[in-house]
Image (cartoon, rainbow over the protein chains, first blue to last red):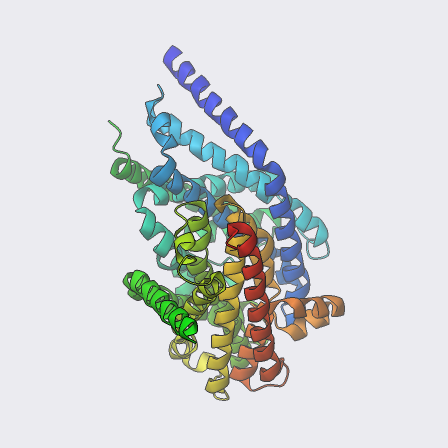
Length: 262
Length: 265
């Protein structure tokens, strides 16, 4: 019990140090997020309707784009970890800390979750305010939204930590997007609603259920917008739960492969 | 005359050197950018988005959605090739060795031309591959292939110059995220990746005028016009001349910034 408490304090110290690093970059992150919000609002609130996209699809498409932003955040986190492993090797110092590896990597994931939340929560809140016309008839369920949002953050953190540990530097930089992530994106309804896809292509919609991004996009839609147009939130929580377990397994393989901790 | 000939020979040697160093990645790049991306974008945009997001889906609409996606391929590829200069400037500074042998302007020009040609080669199969995948879901019967390939060439050169400019303007590699979040993201979204110019003008006439400063728009508008044969998009001659104008402008700015950064005079 005492040892666990000690681990927890070390973990907390690591998270505090990460929070300090995030604070240094906060101004940059907020400027980046503001530009993204404005561009997304113009794109989804203005250009899409001008092209003929029905007004009732604007809110779900905007929410889907946030799931995409989380993926970009994850990619940034993955690249930073990759550069550290390849060049700086700060991770070597972390590995020598009197802390079980699961606690150490939990601090990495916590760091990602805090940073991604700081960047994407303004996207949600300011974006929804600016697109208030499209969000008028929504029935949000905030407790479920927080659960799905946190699960999405944890999944993205685990996925990109695992990818940065599992693949070699050159392969990651050269091939990760085209050979892994684009297929994941192709099979995910980030830029359209899953039920609409099921109407004209039931088999493809069925295949999409294998992609974790489907549950993250549809879960965020179901909890922020509400209604029966989306995959129910409890199914999304189940889907994301399974995806997180698989991502933990994958990350553990990556740790063993790259860092070989004794 | 002899000096010019010598410079030209060294210029060609540098091109050869670049080809030599990049040839190992040629197959990988071709597989990723000329095969996987067209397949993925064709299915995502022309098939799923075209059918799920619009009340009246049509092959023409699918074609427009797919046509704009070329921007991601060219923007990503030129970025990957030319951002290497930023890492070089932060690290070994191989370019400082190059400028002892050749005029710095020609060194810059060589990199722009090499990446432009490489990108053009990689982007060439994009539309034929899309047509192969999508079949009757897209309408490419009116495509003017000569115009389309000329635009791809001009667009590749322009974005190559743009990303080399970005590489010399950025102070450190940590700023790359800001480049994508603050500049490239907006260039993509307001550069015809999805929405053509007529939709931007319909939404806001002022924004419709402002986006004419976005070089990416001329690539997508030209490509959409060349593929559909429609007069709803900017004319070919305007697009190609604007792309070359932007190429010249970015090259000049790159040269100016490079001189300040490397202090080569």
